[in-house]
Length: 92
Image (tube, rainbow, N blue to C red; front, top):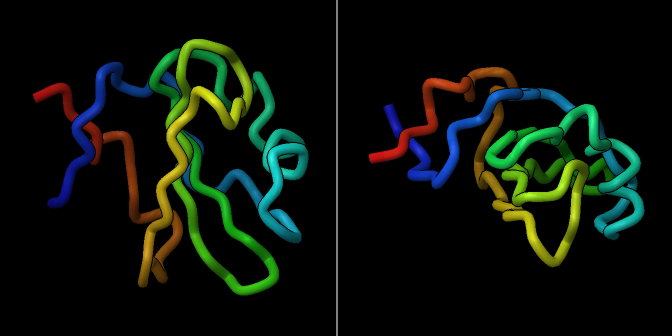
């Protein structure tokens, strides 16, 4: 299985955090709250409602989504939301 090499393994992983109407920091922050991305390395998957793009967010040091610290990765051709699990993250 494919894996993401990360600095911190997710303590919390949310495979379907929700949908945003369009990509903006404030819209993403509305669904990737400090309770969803609470710890460094926490991860969440969400979709963009306007064109069904899927994104993975990896939290930096600050709880909640921060555009200037967190990783945001587009998962292209990702049709099966929920098939990504915490086992897809590794430290080595």
